[in-house]
Image 1 (cartoon, rainbow, N blue to C red):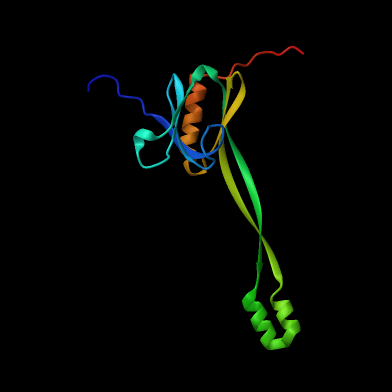
Image 2: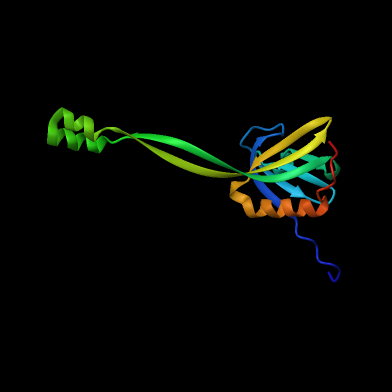
Length: 155
């Protein structure tokens, strides 16, 4: 009560892309403590049965946030244009009025990538677009716990 205040937990949530034995797209919470990352799959209604995975901080090599830009082409045909063109100018008007139009739909995704060593190099990849600020806090806290070692590399 009068001691040191408890540190805020460093937690984020995202959709699993790859790296854990769960279905892609599963909601995952990520908790960072000074000792480990704790991943919990939010699967089912009973919280006691949610799968939990622990990754010691010593095994982690790198944590990074990346942006992925996804461009999707949407093809649509103008049915009202076809009807109006056909009524006004006949068959040729229907062909011109109902022509196919292509639009581009652009989506940006933020991806949290955790590189770790467990026998060989592995990754846990999460889409954290909806929790970007929390993910940035987790990333910054990890960098405080395990700063990047910079040294001269001889070739």
